[in-house]
Length: 126
Image (cartoon, rainbow, N blue to C red; front, side):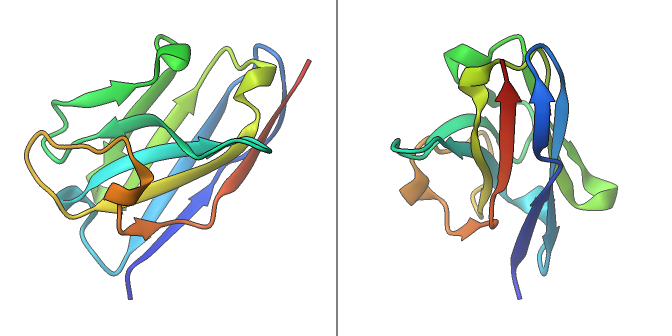
């Protein structure tokens, strides 16, 4: 069974850091493009950061560039999102998603991903 489990969310003060983890089971994560999405109350689910299978191609939404870093740990079958200098506007439920497409591909639309985690809440207090 393919499963993604996010962890690492929580409550943090403005300027703080969190590292989100997305652990995969039932498949080899290295063969999948991965996206981190977030959804704030009343808003749609938007791509924050993505990474292709070859790891040479990454995406960051403009508001998180220079603050967030996406990475893989193949040995742990896990993808991380390191979030630094957090702001109240980063508050949202964060989801990881995976799609079995190789090369330099990543998707920015939620419809492009077949597998999703359950989400983890990130709250940044002002």
